[in-house]
Length: 108
Image (cartoon, rainbow, N blue to C red):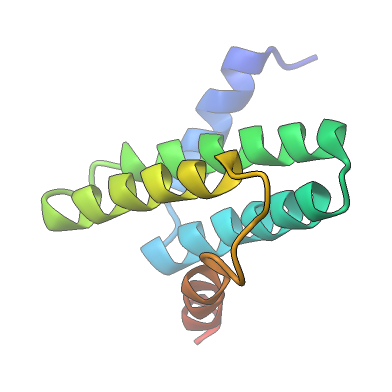
């Protein structure tokens, strides 16, 4: 059985082979899952999806390839996503278009 720490190390190694668009496309999958769960009032699944979202976003932010302005943008996205999910009612589409555009870019 793989411990949590080993799982994070394995994930980090794999994560750092992905392009930024691939990373953010995967973050977007968890973002969409978290939004859906929150809107449906499924707090248990929301918390799990939100935790995975933050874990993947943190792996992206700490990827040594993304520095300077790019890293600041990623940190700002993390901050804004957290602010969004703290609200009782989720606004419109939030960051859906941002993450969807990254997923589309990763496919090309």
